[in-house]
Image (cartoon, rainbow over all chains, first blue to last red; front, side):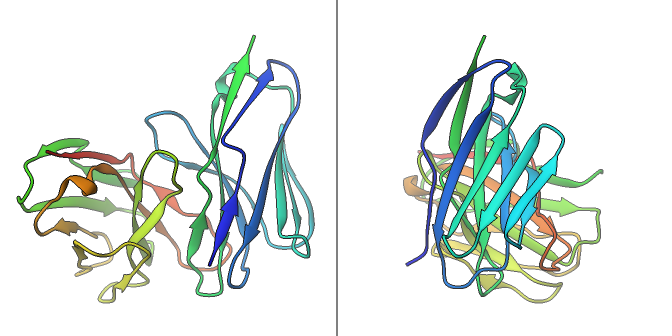
Length: 109
Length: 113
């Protein structure tokens, strides 16, 4: 079966750095996406990785290791508005997105 | 209309009733998707359409049907609603090429009683 694993919930302090991990087992791999979802809102795109390594976008970075079936999302200089759920999704061999259940990130002052 | 729009925003529906959730996009995206999101579970694909005139079944298609008569619209129909279909439904679209992200509508919160 196909499986995406993420921690259910994490807590971090404003101004700090947090790393959200995602491990996956899918039938094929055609890219990994990270989305942010604030409570009661739609998911919005954050990053895309298809090759191994780090992709940086401002305060957010995403890393991929295809051999390990592993990715992480790194958030720096945390702000209160970063309190949200972070969803990891893998595009499989059929080009369908398989989604993790999401990690709820709580930022404390 | 800007982006992707869903209607209604929320609905309470009696079990056994028929309901159509509407989804419209103005981005000329080829691919469209319907997901349901339940607490503790990831987004689950109900149906998808890679281009106008074609549709396919996702992970949880039972009890749902879709049509794609044109590029812009992708309605989802519940023929006879059951309480287990209580969920938040998201419509999404993408250009369909492999490295592009999906854009989501604001969601429809459906409660079947």
